[in-house]
Image (tube, rainbow, N blue to C red; front, side):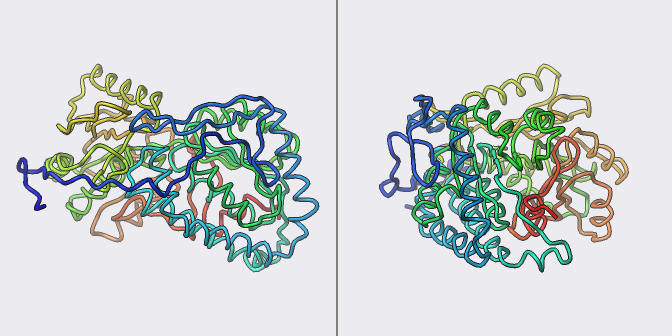
Length: 485
C-alpha cells in the first residue's frame, strides 16, 4: 500500500506490529536465588503491567528481609567456595556464554522490554538488547587481563555486590552492572525496578541455562524496602545504584562510616547546545533522538536546549515540523516513534510539570497527534522563552518535555548550561573543532557528545558529577569500582 499524505507533514502507515507469539511470560515469577527460582518468604506478589494497554503481564515476588538474607548468603558462599577461586579465563567463558544467549534470544527480549517498559520496539530491538549483549562480550574479554589493565596495582575482587537498577533501561542496566562485577571476580545480588522486572527475570533464566555456578548471580524483586535491606546488609561489600538523586543521597548516608564501596549514577538535566555554525538538520534530529524517541526516559536526555540567537527561529521551526511527523502509540508497532510512559506515577509527574510550566506563564507547543485511549501516553512538548529560574529548566522531569533558551556568546551558554544541580551529560553542535574542545573543558558534565547524542559503547565510561553521582560504568573505568587496588 502506497503511503498517502494526510497533511503537509504526516503520512498514514499501515500498522506493523511485532509478533508476540514467540514470547513466553510465566503467570508468576519467584526470586532467583542460588541458581533457581524460589517462592518468597514474604508470600507476597505484585503485578507488573503493560503501560501501553494496562494489561497485567505477570505476578512478581516481593522479597522481604529474610529473602534478602538468603540471596546474600548464596552470593557469599558462591564467592568464597567457587567464584573467587575459579581461574579468570574460566569466568570469562561463562560471561561470554551469557552474551551469546542474549543474542540468540534477542527478539524475545526486545519484545518483553517493550511490553513491560513501554519503549518503542525499534529502540529495544536496535539498541537496548544488542548493547546489553555487547557489554557481556566486552567484559568477558577483560576477565583474565586485569593485571594488564591495572599494572603494578594487584587488583582483587571485593566480594558480594548489591546492585539496584531503574526502569528506563532494565536489561541494559543489568548488563552494565553484572558484567563488570563478574569479570572482576565478584558475586551479585541485583534488584530491578518493580515496574520493569521481567527482562531481569528472563536474564536470570539465561544465567541458569548457561550453568553459571549457583549463587554467583541472584536476582530478587520488590519495592523500596527490599532495596533498603540490600543497601544495609552486612554482607554487601559494594553498592552500585542507578536511579533518582534523592534515593542516591539516602544510600550515601546509609553507607557512610562503613567499608562499603559505592558508585551512584543519578539524575540529570542535560544541555543541548546548538551554535549558528552547526549542521542544523542533523542537530534537529539529534534533539529528537535525545528527548523524544525515548519518551525522555533517559537520565542523560537532552531536556534543556540552548540555541544561538541568530539560528533560534530556524531550529524551532524545523523542530516543530519534525515533531508533527512523530508517531505516538503502540510500542510494539515498528512505525512508532514515541511509546508509552513507563508507569502512571511517572505520567502524573510529567503532567504536573506541564501544569507548572503553564502556571509560570511559559509558551507551550505540543504536536497535534491523537493519543491512544488506553495506557500511559504523553505528547512531545516544547516550552519556549524559558528563564533559568523556571522549575522546568532546573528540575528533572523524565518525560518528553524540552525547555528552550537562547544565548549569544560561548561564555553565556557555558554559564547557563552549568547552572543546574546536575552534571551527567551534554551535547554540543558546531562546525568548529576548537569550540568543541573548549566547551568540553568548561561544561561540568561527565559525558559531552559532539555533533551527535545518546551514543553509547561498552568501551566508553559513563557517569556524572555533582548531584548526578560519582563513579563510572563502562569501559576500563567500569572495572575500577569492583576492585580493591
